[in-house]
Image (cartoon, rainbow, N blue to C red; front, side, top):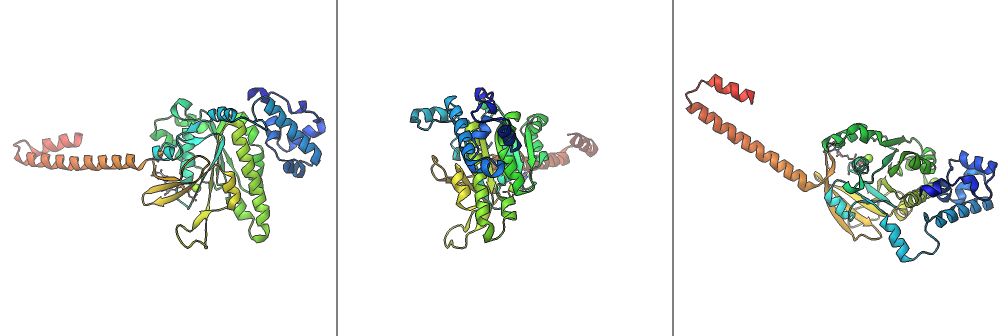
Length: 366
Ligand code: GTP
Ligand code: MG
């Protein structure tokens, strides 16, 4: 990959100083950025002609194919298999959730978590901020994290708490997470366009967007704006997917739910954003509260069977119900044992001829 990054965008046929300036003004500074662009983006946003936009994208993609970074137009299943072999899986720290993903959150894919408020979407994202930084041997992605926060719910203190609970270096973990606070839909679109650069400059291996839809949902209100909103979301989703593939990184997005009044049986909630988000997400997981626990349901995947599992939100981020049951049983047992011990002590105290004061002193010292 590094070889292609060294190729300057001006080396492409047809890129003179004027075109280069236009591309740069639109945040496109590398061949990879250009290859991940769409004709519409270049025409509408940068004022290039249709023909130039087509040629530039065609040439940049041809170059990347030559270098073996992009798949050729026609590839053998073997080549695809080899490319998939570069895919890495990142642990969620919950064995159950990892098993649902057959090992963890994948690079080269967009993983969507959707669910009602408090279902654990943001907590999963915070946990992944830590696990993604672990070395690959420890089931991390060995890279930095870019956290795109559209709901202002990113909390560095929660990151510190998770890291501390897991005996990790809090400062190192915090300094490898780059947070982009985004306040409106067009700002989000701009950040998504500049992703290529941000990923390269900061060694990013995980991009989180929490949440993908809140800003567009708030700004594009009413039926009249629906098609524009969907078009914009479509652009964002397709770019995220291409970025995940080209840079071999994991992309995790969260999505809200909406009521589906036409559902007569079963759960009447469905993911917001319609089919546009669902189709572009590689994996789609629905989160639900289940008492103290959370249920995760694999709704859509090209290679996983339909399945569900339970996890917990803990001090250390995400964990398994068994673990916390074990822990709480253990602490319940130990407190019971302590009470019994105390009772035993006090009865032996009465029987003892020793002075009561002496005994109390030693108990306090314990
Ligand atoms: P919205 O963004 O509102 O749609 O919800 P969400 O799905 O992002 O929910 P989030 O991930 O923020 O989960 C919130 C839940 O996590 C609440 O039930 C909190 O009690 C729980 N939670 C947050 N921090 C901690 C913590 O440090 N320890 C434990 N045990 N639970 C926590
Ligand atoms: Mg949230």
